[in-house]
Length: 377
Image (cartoon, rainbow, N blue to C red; front, side, top):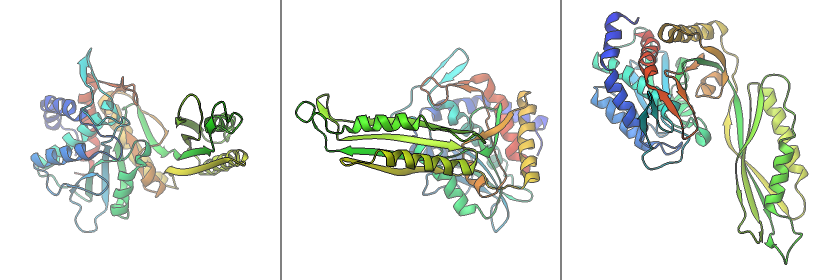
């Protein structure tokens, strides 16, 4: 289905409704692994628009199957409900100077609203796809230690039938069709500890962890592809006059090359082994594992990527930059399924509490979303 004048008029006539939906949804807290409030809201909203068969699965995905009966191939369209912020109370929101300001409003709430609006159009008009099933998903667990749980669950259930996967995330000017894999670890150091005066000289868990961090930041990354590392959180100790018995950090490395992940794993293991001595216990637990891309049919991938790029060009007047990233696409791409990630808005400050979305970008973003979702109708 093309963006006809009638369809464009529909989108424009419902812009205020979508705007108000965004203001409401953006304030509902949804940390990764705690998305139940948003899931319940989205399910109820879809059902109120006439959507049939909507359900919430055990990963807290909101799933709206359209024409997915039998064993027909399926195209998936997704946007993630979770945000990086731990708030369990309503998120602070204000509208000012042409922007909506709210943590998580662009990553990924604005894109969720674009997809919900397209889903409403399908439900209200009783549309059915022509040659395949369409699965609309407001998925959980994209951020941080959510570890792509929502997308994993969808692919476990439908993966053998999925022939293409589109996720709406972040801004319209970037198109991601290659996966950056990552491994994330909780690394803990334990020592005997003691009194800072009476037991001076005993190993201090914080000092040991600090030395480990210093060593990890001396690691040379592989030259091929792009590989990075980061310590994102540290904690430990008891008091200023206590030799710390415990210290912990969250550490990750990521790369767009599978072999580089293995190389970084070996280097991490070597660093940790070098600090394991009498009186120092070091544990390393894998808490997140995002795969890189597997071989994907190049022609099919190009068709899908070009379709998304053309939608951005038609709706925003720009050719999005194509690159690799860590998104929900990692899972289908690791299975060899053509996949693409593109946004439906213009935002700034993602992953900060100063995040904001340009209000004037929402209408063309709606059109971009409709352009892609309605392709199979």
